[in-house]
Every structure is written in C-alpha cells, then in structure tokens.
Image (cartoon, rainbow, N blue to C red; front, side):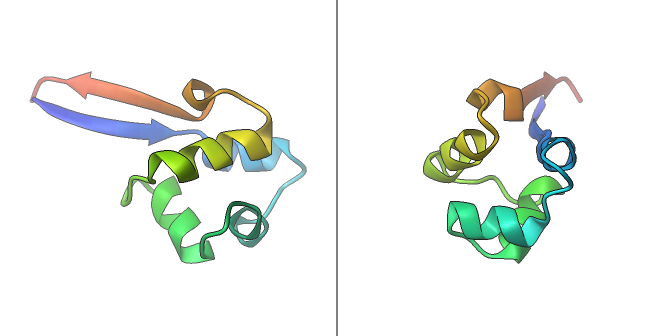
Length: 72
C-alpha cells in the first residue's frame, strides 16, 4: 500500500491573483525552491509550514492538502 499527500497550492496561487511561488515563499518563510518541491509532491512540508500555507490562502489545512491512500 502506498500513500501520497496531494496539494492544491498551484490552484490556490492562481485563484489568489496568480501569486508567484516566490511571493508565497516569502509569506511562509521558506525558499521558492521549497514551495516548488511541495507543489510537485517531492517534499512534504512540516506541519508548521502546512498551516502557514493554509493561513495565507484563508482556507483550512484539508483544503490545501489531501491524503490519498491507495493499494499498489
């Protein structure tokens, strides 16, 4: 069984007036590269960073991240 954390960050950035990865990075205190890696699913953010991302967009954590559990 494999698990994946999926996110809607790119979609939320677009809805927020085409916010750039750099702008989001500055607002949550990480690098642009970190935002990119999170968006691509190559890196799972800490709980603290995940909450900061949700706060920037004014949504709940589960509106940004979803846990997808599926059998291999």
